[in-house]
Amino acid sequence: MKSRSKRNTRASASDEFLGFTSSVAIDSRLWRHDIAGSLAHAQSLAEADIISKGDMEKIAEGLRRIAADIRSGRFEFDPTFEDLHMNLEHSLTALIGDAGARLHTGRSRNDQVALDMRLYVREGIAELIGETLQLQETLIRRSGDGMDAILPGYTHLQHGQPVLLSHHLLSHFWKLQRDIQRFSDCYKRTNLSPLGSGALAGTAFPIERATAANLLRMRGVTENSLDAVSDRDFVAEAAFAASMLTIHLTSICEELVLWSSQEFRFVRLPKELSGGSSMMPQKLNPDIPELIRGKSGRVLGGLFTILTLLKSLPLAYNRDLQEDKENLFDVFDTVGASLHALTLFLTELEFDKVRMRESAEAGLMTATDLADFLTSRGMPFRAAHGLVKELAVLAEGDECKFRELAKEKLAAHSKKLKISDLDFLTLEKSIGRRTAEGGTAPASVKRQMEKALLSVSENRAMLETMRFEVGAVGELLS
Ligand code: ARG
Image 1: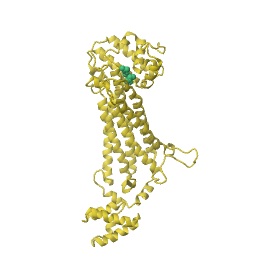
Image 2: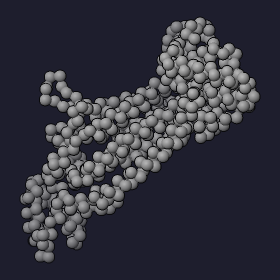
Image 3: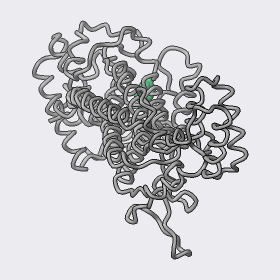
Image 4: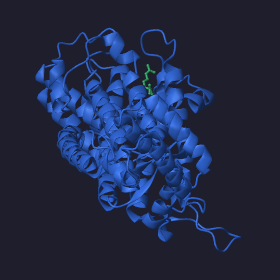
């Protein structure tokens, strides 16, 4: 199998041509998908009596032998055969003769590679959803530890209003939730078979396109042959969903970097999962969140490369499309590894709740509550806002002074207001008042957490279905 005569397909192809155009070093990663696609295609050819049942069986046996050789590392891909598809077809024909040469009947590499990519993207999406669900579960678990912790809520990175740590952590859960929705939406558009589109105009052989689609557990077939071989919007879409997810990860990571710094000290870094310095012996650094933040660059780069290679392409297949793979592979690999590392990191991270509380006590974060209170006693909100703002300026950030001034002002404003009326100006009371759905009051957060748990179990069920469909590739091969 290893010694194949070079140049037997492209006798005129110069080394320079192949050196520049050969893609097998990259697309060999698609071997399982390509072989499964070929097995499904061979079966649909046989069912339509285009090839004999005997040939179909030889093809299946040959392809499964090749799969076993690739899996065990005995197969050598040859760059002179340009790409994965040609490598496999040549090996098959070398192995089983004429039957192998019949496999490509009614098929082009154009619909073949589009199929491989759809199978790969659908699998990658399922894997990333699985990793995202694990991160979501970790966020829910850590939120459970955070019901008794209050920290500052920020806008402009300035103290705003106090929030529960649980509420804060769950905010990241819902961002990831939308990322999962984007992936599952993209999955539906991806999971269609382009086989039967041929090179561009459709196949002239009377195959039943649904046969291969069903064998691969795809949910249908594409509607237009030109469209099916010419677009990779599902690749771009998956890369976007992965990019949006990465952006969400970078926000979590940025926060962890800040929170672990001496200025915040809201978290203590896990020793086993943190770096040190080659010079400064005392250092513990948040390398994992920093690297996730940094690696987002290549993810966005991949997305932009994919979009750019699609731009202005005339119909139908163009070789530009070959460039989708390296980029998509890197996007999926990077995001998968980032999700995994962050889940581990968040599991091990220690929250310093005392320090969070200390920080939350500063910054007059109950000022809104005072303005709300005055409003509930009949003062127009804008006037109350102005009055409390004056107090805040006078208090110069000093919580005690703020309360004293508030008492004086209140007494001056209304005889009916009692000093004890200010007892509500505590962090707990401020939080406890925000009982509307989606707010930070403990009761609301508990309801939120229940919804989060429910959606995780719904998404786990969805993932099971995806895994069943994705599993068709492995099952066909074995
Ligand atoms: N390696 C090619 C790709 O990834 C496969 C399709 C080649 N088709 C062709 N007509 N040259 O897009």
